[in-house]
Amino acid sequence: MTKPATTLRCIGSGDAFGSGGRLNSCYHLNLLSTQMLLDCGCSSLIGLQRWGVHAAEIDTVVISHLHGDHFGGIPYLLLEGKYASQRSKALTLVGPPGLQQRVEAVSEAFYPGIISKNNNFPVVFQLLDPQKPLVVNDARIECFRVRHGHSKHAYGLRIEVDGKVISYSGDTEWTENLIPLSQGSDLFIVECCAYDQPIPSHLDYRTLQKHRSKLECRKLVLTHMGPEMLSRLDDLELDTLNDGDVFEI
Image (cartoon, rainbow, N blue to C red; front, top):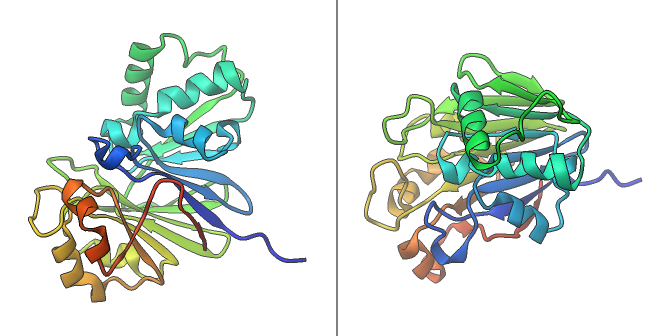
């Protein structure tokens, strides 16, 4: 019998402004043993519905940093689990320090009471730490500090599960930590906001091209692209992600 493929579907590849009509950052890993989201931006539930991914089957959500276009979809995921699918199994939320406080505050502001002791499913919070890899629902999760604004807790993510390695830069300008993050990855998802004008806190295409040979991964794809990048897609030598794209890993 053929072993089922590990797949990654891009739920949303857009930036905070929805450039090009793209949804916020969200990537769905359908693995042999578990289902996982890497980031869960505000529009993620729309994308999950659009691409036929059942929110109630997701075991783990891993958040790279606490900006709304990367974590703001969690309240809607909780709302869907409580009222629409009547979810019963636990949902594990993994992210930077402050994740639980931020999720609870935003959830209470949006939909008071969606996190409560009376829920049919437990919500479990676990924190990322660059010094301590986590094992959550059969997946080994590492994080690497990246450079995004003034935050000390913006991370690139590395997921090892079912014999595969998927890495994700989160939002960052160039940092040498992208090199070990990429090493040995079957798929490396890299944000690339601009084309040739460096923007603080974000990568641009020319800088990434300059360092591409240092990133030792089997496949690299670009995401989180702004208007200039989207206008030059035909000029790019590196592969790009679109909402709905699926990769077998």
